[in-house]
Image 1 (spheres, one colour):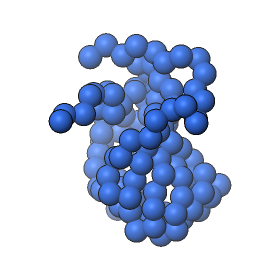
Image 2 (cartoon, rainbow, N blue to C red):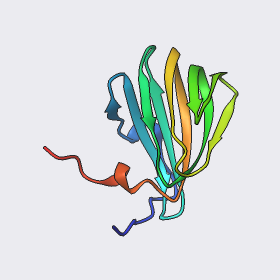
Image 3 (cartoon, rainbow, N blue to C red):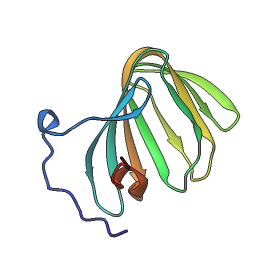
Image 4 (cartoon, rainbow, N blue to C red):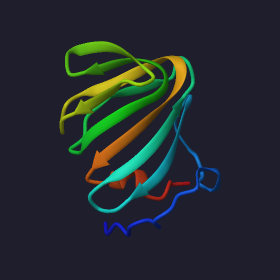
Length: 118
């Protein structure tokens, strides 16, 4: 899949949110084939299921509180914290207080760009 870079500016109010999972919405903010920024909003109790991918990921906890599992380690993270995930490391989280994560992936997550099937 060829990834066409986004425009230089993203206006949050003009950029749609999509349902990612129960209690989780994401807003893709910008990308090219090498990098992607995604804002993810969690309701309390929402779970980012355990998964792995070949992308490097760094995430900033903008707000809220999350029980984060990376590999075998579980930590509670709050607004102002961050985490890094190596490629192919199993990870996931549970939101314990509503919040927002800012994810950066390298390369871009092509699976986030594929059209949704009806």
